[in-house]
Image 1 (cartoon, rainbow, N blue to C red):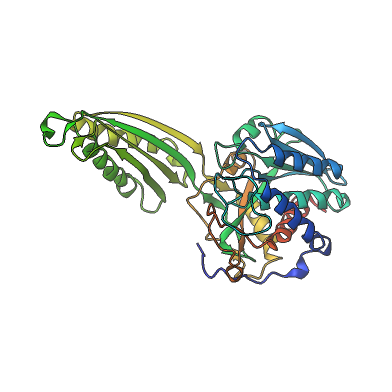
Image 2 (cartoon, rainbow, N blue to C red):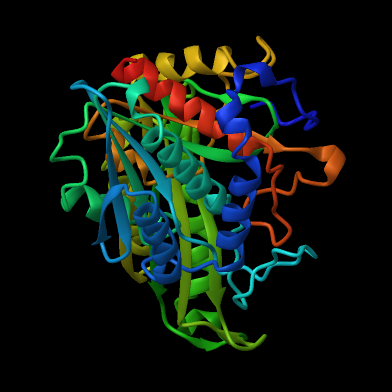
Length: 404
């Protein structure tokens, strides 16, 4: 992945239509309002109220209360045609903001530290432009404001609630502002873009005792340590080296004193992979490893395994749609970044599993302005000039997919 330099790449501003350029001050105002009122997953009540009131003010048909706080807006064009869905996530993170800016979060311990405020703003800007230029596109656009992307996941319940139906979506697109890419770039590729997200929690059950008399015990720390080491062999020796996968143990807790052998040890981790063929492989193999090591030490274990998000897999035709649009706006070839995969996860995958679609990264970092902190960092922020660029890309995708 291209991560440096993070200085902006040239954008052909002439390719961003005047009507969208004229929206810039409003886009910034909407983004900053949303940034000051961050809310966690499935609790985005103020956020949803602002979006719904704004859509109502513009006369855009919409439905609220989907999957608790989700919203779907429907914008028909001037004549029949395909249906394109656009998705934007709404939730913030449990992060205390450290930016000293006028639009700093007003909610203690909660922050838009991943760009979702920008995603909503770009979707709102797109909705406004389309609603005021219905004669410029055919078909119908459905704009999906989704709760709880950061967890526990709002895409799946929205799909189950039928947001891709009535009218049925023929395709879907979405973007993620991306501070690992500089302003003026678009990260787009067909196939796997982001990884599946799975997690596990395991308790090793041994037999505690005195640290000086180990023969009377079953040392859970020794067992857990061997488990952590052995789990690394799954990717190293059970996964084709051409494939990409990660097994990470991020937590390991045991013991209360230096001279006491712990009766139990708990460890937790995450699994990531791109290829859907690994669905079901890792929980089985992880349990085999844990079971074998525990058996060799006469220990027992309790294991729980959760599959959260499938991998984000872009449809080749939809990825080409986004790429062809982006090439008309950014300077090529520098502005198009096809090698942009990440082991991060996204529940956009649930939408992409239902209809052909493309999820892409929109470079938002500007190192010269100090706007290059990574996602989820307490000082995360992005260059707001990216907002108009996002609207232009979405509008052009609508015009190309649905027809002018």
